[in-house]
Image (cartoon, rainbow, N blue to C red; front, side, top):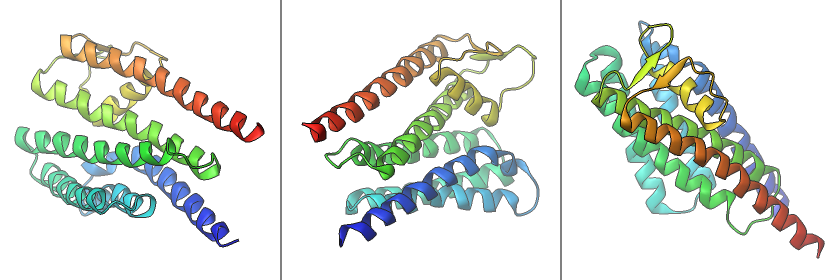
Length: 218
């Protein structure tokens, strides 16, 4: 019976993480708004994965790494919002990649450990999928920063972070609308890798769920 409150807390923590990720992805335009909005946005962004790590992982090393990464993301984001420039943009991409990698490690350990597949694991698996997608957006953004013109929009308009996030999820789900096209070598390579990885993730997750269900039935 003592494990019941723990299970409920894990479901709550994973539900809050999933909700926070969705809110972050939908409110990114605030990072370019005026006043205090960019600072508030990046404070929220820099807190999400740090709080999730403390809730889902008991590793002191991971907690410390994520706390430092969160501070770096906040500083880089605020700098880019209020004093934008190539160096500030590079800092945002690099810190975001590190921040996402840390969260991916936390969620992979949580999702694919030996724990029973309950609601909290399904929520964590969903969050992991979204984090991988937004992490790839940072990688693709870094490619565009290093080699401008690596991505081309059919509208001819500029490709910002929000468009790159959209392209990342479209690529990972293999929908491929074709309104944003990777034309550079590295852009095409990473986009292909993401498409394959997104498909493999679904297969691996389904295999884990089926395998654990079968083991309980045996």
